[in-house]
Amino acid sequence: MSTVAAYAAPSAKAPLERTAIERRPVGASDVLIDIKYAGICHSDIHQVRAGWGEAIFPMVPGHEIAGVVGEVGPGVTGFAVGDRVGVGCLVDSCGECDHCVQGLEQYCAQGWTGTYNDRDRNGDPTYGGYSTRIVVNEDFVVRIPDALPLDVAAPLLCAGITVYSPLKQWNGGPGKKVAVVGLGGLGHLAVRFAHVLGAEVTVLSQSLRKRADGLRLGADHYYATNDPATFEELAGTFDLVLSTVSAPLDLDAYLGLVKTDGALVNVGAPEEPVSLNLFSLLFGRKTLAGSIIGGLGETQEMLDLCGEHGIGAEIELIRADEINEAYERILSGDVRYRFVIDTATI
Ligand code: NAP
Ligand code: ZN
Image 1 (cartoon, rainbow, N blue to C red):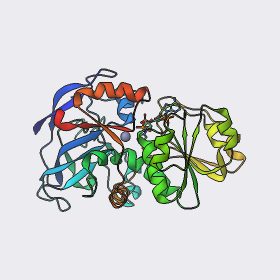
Image 2 (cartoon, rainbow, N blue to C red; image 1 turned 180 degrees about the horizontal axis):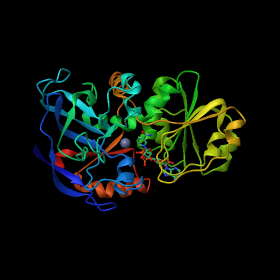
Image 3 (cartoon, rainbow, N blue to C red; image 1 turned 45 degrees about the horizontal axis):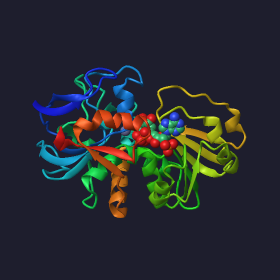
Image 4 (cartoon, rainbow, N blue to C red; image 1 turned 60 degrees about the horizontal axis):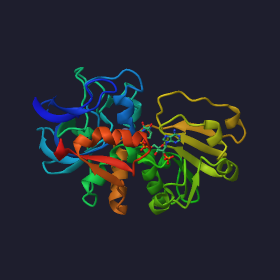
């Protein structure tokens, strides 16, 4: 075991504070990573506040981890000391079910192990990236291309893959009209990816406040959803509407924007249930779907694409003692577009 510095929430809704945690010894297939940067995902806030239900405390959040390999176990074949690597939302899965075998570890039939707020195979709590080091089985570690600085790469490990995966699954490419709902951490990367994949991209944000940013990130069009005229003008327009909204969404209104045979795909994870009038699907043979993160292979594919195209997140780098303030700013919509913790300040 080794003791490492971390930031943890001692109980639900409590502010995060500096603490020390134990990391397991480096096993045969493990990689020890010196964490350099950790992104702050809205999911961290949902979980610190126990908004998704019961949670494990103390909680060290963080599933957007970028760092450098500091040590490898004797059986590790894919990584060497000094490699630039990342860890996302999952650190283990059964490895044997149909989904794991297909590289869809995020749909593991046994349930995957979360990077934090979960328990490992020994029943010990997992602790995330708001810390200086982490020990992870090499199968759950990905490479960060040399072309990408580690700080802007960190948010790709959750926000990036979460929007990349559905864009690929629902063919958000050439000839397709894609709308991205919510221009936050996930949304701004969705705009970048949909643009690079060749789709015609529209941002649907609550107001026109971030219009210039949206267009700069690669959107072709930008509309405010606080203007009811938007829903009339864009009715039946999109092949794919991708919602990244962290609050309950008016599904019926957004399904109205979907073309016949198109899809509304939701990746937002609000704390309250939403309602749906099924007639919103019937007229137009529309699909309502969801998607969670992505598998390890697809995450590597996304990172390699980002390396080729120089795609990273637009970030605000913060010190660890600014985490609580950053949470408040995210909740008030004051984020452009991802907070990333410099873990040297922990
Ligand atoms: P974020 O940076 O806070 O962005 C969310 C955006 O949603 C905001 O920027 C805002 O966009 C919009 N929004 C917020 N409140 C709203 C409201 N009341 N009504 C309408 N729009 C609102 O959060 P994030 O880190 O991107 O995460 C977004 C959601 O995805 C969270 O619920 C998170 O837990 C979830 N998530 C899911 C997965 C997955 O695998 N499915 C992975 C990661 C995160 P505008 O200001 O542009 O309107
Ligand atoms: Zn996340």
